[in-house]
Image (cartoon, rainbow, N blue to C red; front, side, top):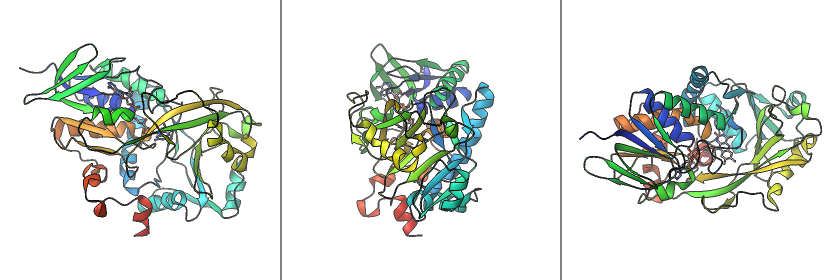
Length: 394
Ligand SMILES: Cc1cc2nc3c(=O)[nH]c(=O)nc-3n(C[C@H](O)[C@H](O)[C@H](O)COP(=O)(O)OP(=O)(O)OC[C@H]3O[C@@H](n4cnc5c(N)ncnc54)[C@H](O)[C@@H]3O)c2cc1C
């Protein structure tokens, strides 16, 4: 008996919706379910902006995936007639030997990406908003910008529906089972059958992946919006999307101000307090502002104005901070992606394409071998080195 669906997607956040769209565009009968609304503010894909950049300091092997992601973002914009991406340029600042600066330059050189290396004086001339230590330099790239996450998810969901996909919001999946002739997915309201499933559970992945031995740490990340003294100096078109590696090792990032009057957004990229996606405190706590305020005072004094709001979002960190994208080692009918470790959004369209390839064909032509789960299952002495260790080895 043919199953009612070819593929069921569990988790319709950024990666799940993108996979739903990729499958529906290929004529596949697909059902996607999310325990919350689509989009929602409960997981990892809210907060009005996400950085996208090419010179990828985390690992140069992401660059081919980014090239494809950029192409797809532009295709998505054309298909939806919506602006999802603002090209703002990107400025990555720090000491010359910081992972951020040296890694960005390395990725740019390795992949022939257009970029400039700026001295501290050149940064001061072009972006006087920053007050930087004497030994700072920067990499600047034009091919960087900011994405609008909620709009990206809602337009992808609408397009998937128009292409024939079914999307069920507010329908939590309780369990899934693999049988000899298909899969069964039980939700709070119904049991569905399909040939295959794709699991994109974000911060809930450990629970959803059931017996898969993957170590993921969910952390409570805080972002802030402030009111600069002179907002015009930080407006879209004037100010870049930026990241800064502080002398004490902290990494901060931020965006130009959008026309929505929410304020200037910035955050601290680190493994904050470990939490649980169901019990995390989503309201601002005393002390949350201390997470990013020192960066304003020290490096962006002209933006060190009153706090407008604080947001809480979740990182799902893999052991080496690289994504995990693969077929389930024990179930051929199950594909999954998780562990986006606070830097996955910019890849949303290409992850959808990869997961659709893996679910339908068992393989993909896109270069994801460095993201497979097997790297984490090797004996510790052979495990994948961190990007900085790999760089050290040349
Ligand atoms: C503060 C912050 C800043 C970030 N900045 C950047 C950035 O600048 N650039 C960048 O590229 N990335 C950034 N990221 C990371 C990026 O946003 C994430 O990697 C990406 O959004 C993860 O998408 P996802 O689909 O895995 O998770 P989500 O979008 O959270 O989706 C998971 C979905 O699964 C659903 N779900 C869970 N359990 C069930 C169940 N039982 N049944 C049904 N549905 C279920 C959830 O409701 C959720 O909607 C940032 C993240 C945060 C938190």
